Image (cartoon, rainbow, N blue to C red; front, side):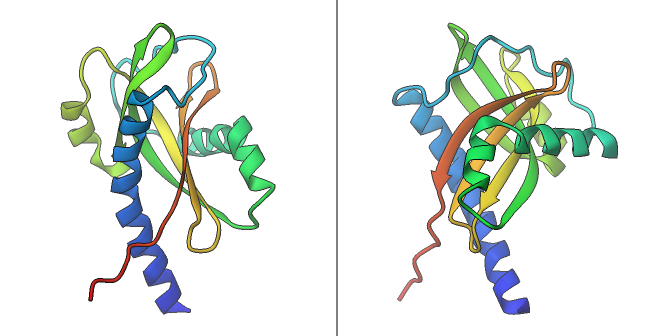
Length: 158
């Protein structure tokens, strides 16, 4: 059992970077997101309280896409993150994703014109099979479904 969890952890970490890069590419290729408005995001990054972390996860898991995917998968896991969004005509034009624990790096990486949100990456399935990135506006308690991507385990090198 321990071996399976180790594989899951390695796959998840490898897929995290790949999924983050694909988010930007997919948005540039045609706008994968539909959003009704232009949320402001956090004024400045700060560590979330435990209650806020729980609220972010609860809101993300209640998003339309998360509810849809939860019906098809018996297992899911969540991972907190920071999401920077640049808006154009009330639609995200680019997105940057940084792991939650890397708040100092997130502060440096995100541009001033980006709205920054706490977010959740939800992994669906056993190994996982699908990931969904959801930004959360804590002020309005609104989820912003960003992108769902299939998770493909890395191919072993020969």
